[in-house]
Image 1 (cartoon, one colour):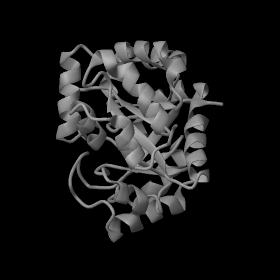
Image 2 (image 1 turned 45 degrees about the vertical axis):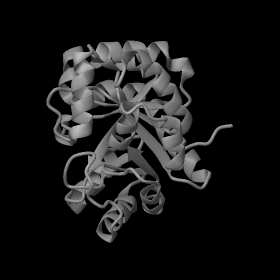
Image 3 (image 1 turned 90 degrees about the horizontal axis):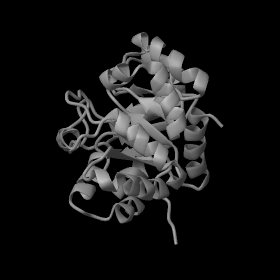
Amino acid sequence: MTGAAAITAAIEAANADGRPALVPFITAGYPDRQEFAQHLQVLSGCGDVVEVGVPFTDPLADGVTIQRSSEAALKAGVSLDWILTTLQQSAADRAAPVILMSYLNPLLAMGYEQLAERCIAAGVAGFIVPDLPWEESAPLRAALEPRGLALVQLVSPVTTADRMKMLCEASAGFVYAVTVTGVTGGNKPVNESAILDYLDRVRSVSPIPVCAGFGIREASQVEQIGLHAEGVIVGSALVEVLEQGGDARAFLQSLGGKQHD
């Protein structure tokens, strides 16, 4: 099974169990480089797909929590090379597909062909690249698609109907439906009727699962949004739990994550 197919299959398996898929996000190497592999193991046991953030100095989509975690990770020496090495060393311990969320510069710096080969070795299933427009994505796709790696496309409430349809048909693994016109981690309501109507529009044109993200931090939100999307992405709220030394497993299971004995 390719990486893209594994992502879709994991989301569909969660739906078959009667729940929306849960996609937890963690900034690589934060809050502690030494505990990163251990955190990944926990997240992959509770989540259906795990999103790993590659820290970057100038993020355009991240709110203050993710910015704070990225700055600390960079100061601790976390790099794309270190992330891929750590993922390769810990691949056998993970129960869920891993997808990298990265801005474009670190990927360009490594080189797309080397990047794709190292992702295969590390068990990475795909990418989310917020600052890469579809119209400029051909070189990266040329490295990812022959190896079955997903390039997830993002849509937002202000995406036009024609472009939304195009991006949904072009996406692989799932479609990332941003729920706010802003950055991650805000306190804007994400389960109001206008947002739910928007998610229904995305689903109506998407041939693959839709996962909603930005501002989701409560079980009631997961439950309601799960009626309008196949999955939910939880980032800033989980990063805050980790940086406060909280129990990530308990938090994710409180949101409806996979349960274990």
